[in-house]
Image 1 (cartoon, rainbow, N blue to C red):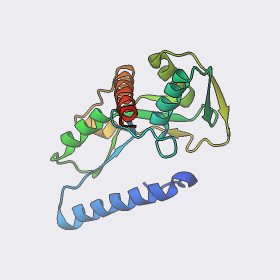
Image 2: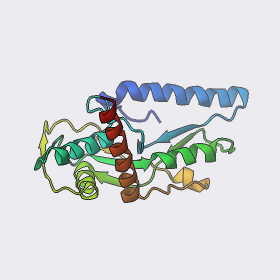
Image 3: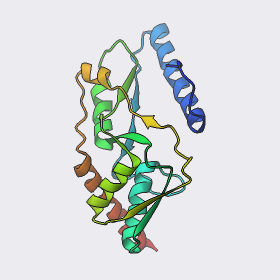
Length: 191
């Protein structure tokens, strides 16, 4: 940790996370506590934030593709160049990891929690289109807005200590989309 330069758009968030990790590390050293920091990769699942102004990339992708389907559009517009790579983990996997490591005594206080499933944005967009049942032409704009080019965690320490991801990407995306449809229908009823 702290061996490389932080990506500019992620810097404030990263500094806050690092401060929390170092605090837990210090408490464990000084007071012999068993605090752990689980560092998840990009999570997705039911109950996500689909607001296009404040959501993360994957729920925004689901919403944009759904909107294309509803509005019978033929083209999906995305920022960047489609080559940025991200790892995803389903929320139930993260919850499972939290429970698993809650009382576990391990020497390190920082544990990466990932699925090992990594795709580029273009691949995720095509996969979501397939699951939702729509064929779209993908057009990229603002091609320089790529953020961190790659986010893949080394989750070998979690595996070494007995925890493994159970994420089934297609199944979990479908479950997430079904929940999204229920949320959308509920919001429409409330209007």
